[in-house]
Image 1 (cartoon, protein in one colour):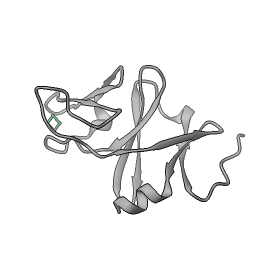
Image 2: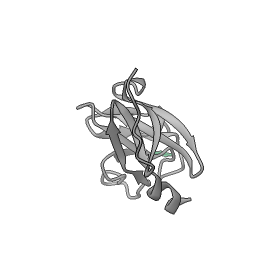
Image 3: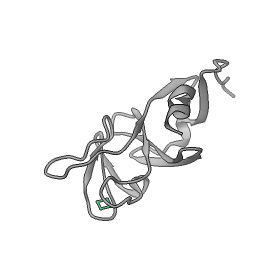
Length: 115
Ligand code: FES
């Protein structure tokens, strides 16, 4: 079993292996549900699990490359910056992820400042 980080500035969220490839894992936090995605290149992204259109659950969308397509009305959301792809307009909150010892962490200060 791998060790977690001892850095108090980090909040351990989930093992990288527990985030499905081209899928998402949802974690409940004090700021709401956050979807952790594993994109096409296995990069990890975290965004609020609410589509900027009508709050559809992005975690249930289809991931392709670094984009997720919302399951409700098919808006495409860029996982890197949370921006809706043109012609749609809007943005979902993104969260910084830190990977260490095969675990995903959030930055404590970022979560606290969003709460
Ligand atoms: S709620 Fe996501 S596209 Fe409408």
